[in-house]
Image (cartoon, rainbow over all chains, first blue to last red; front, side, top):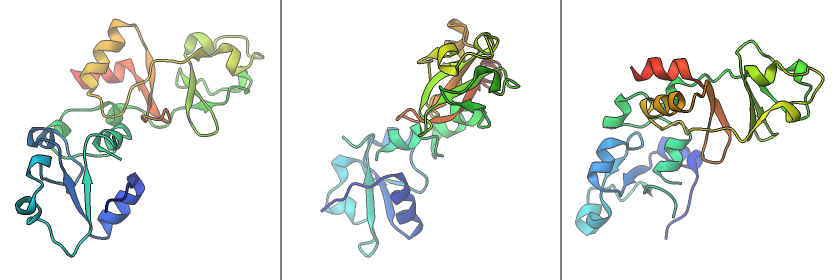
Length: 67
Length: 131
């Protein structure tokens, strides 16, 4: 189950080893993304896409805004 | 929190657009600030502009050279330009330079998406960075 976090919490979690995932389309990821984020567009966020992630580390997923 | 919120806070990003100068990188952070109840004569006028903020650093107004030249015994609230045009740090400088020139703005506060002051952008800095 997901938890909404703010910028400071994000930075703390990433510093502690969390994986950062942008789910916007790849073109938007190419233009701008948070430092260290990988791209897994929402349509590709399935078992195959999630296999790129380390199951032993926290995962932070973000989009354009919190809506 | 989303990417828009991160960028609007002026935080660094990676990617193709990070190569183009943005407002946040050009704005001056050491901007004189004052409160609405301050005496106009007490405001630092060495930069040619000062930003009026509340206790949370939310922008309320702007004092340009024109306002700073007013009656020194008046309050900042009486003299200030209410609700000035503001920009977010992630906006490309080129876009803002054009807007400031078109609307004859010498300066504009730069704020986060919740209105908190990040810095001040002077038109000459924006135009120089955009060229």
